[in-house]
Image (tube, rainbow, N blue to C red):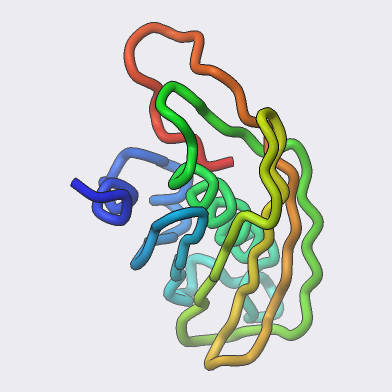
Length: 143
């Protein structure tokens, strides 16, 4: 099973499943995630809630980083900043995320969220990288 197939497993990240984020590509420090706009992710003004867009961006960064972790490593979000450029009311959101820089314990990530090819939001985040200290194999961590 490759990384893209692994990220499609239901139940791997219950919150991500709840919001509706899926992945079409995961490889070498990169991920492409999507979110179909539905009434479940709209705010009172009828546009996609910023939290749904943030979830798409944060999860995308975590998944991109997971794709290049060494065996036994896990990751977690330390901080994120997101800038929203325009509202979205329908269609599909596409998020491209990538590793900008990685050291032994810290990675800097970025995500760009687009709708119909137009930039909707851009995020930059810092993630910690650590060794798994639990019992058994680590579950996928996506921020």
